[in-house]
Image (cartoon, rainbow, N blue to C red; front, side, top):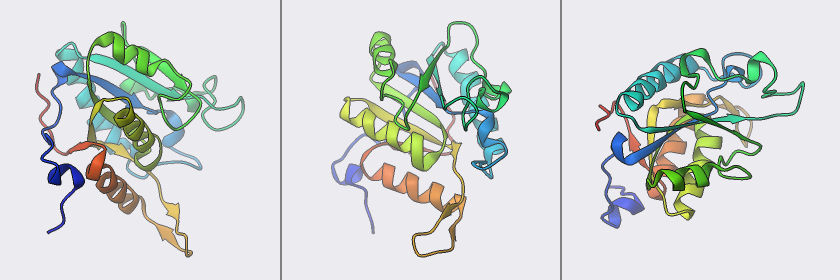
Length: 196
């Protein structure tokens, strides 16, 4: 039976508790609802992320929103409607929004400083796209000494062109990306009843 490297190492595979974590919502922007980078199951992921956000607010968890910032007139133009965070997940109160220029949310941002200030070593990640920004942020978090839980139900991605032609469908890209992350980089939570 196949085992992950984390399983072989006897690592703690229990998803993080909200009270011990920073919850980071990555790129929940209108850009993913329609157009060239639309995510087929974006609505479902957003609905699940809204539940996670509601629970995080209930428990007083540190909440950080991340938004990709593209060039003016291009994808992820933050001054255009498509670059805005979706209505269901808009920041409120003292929730911080970090704008990032690259897939890894730590690159050229103050995300790590914000997490360090919170004095928490656990991250819960949710967002778009599973294979890109969620993956690169989770991998970078390991290098920074942070433990990551990914809420699989609050993530999504899009169809990709296969390297030998054809299309790799979004669900396969999502599943394979999570399997790769579960091997060493993150605990994967599905249908998780988030607790304090």
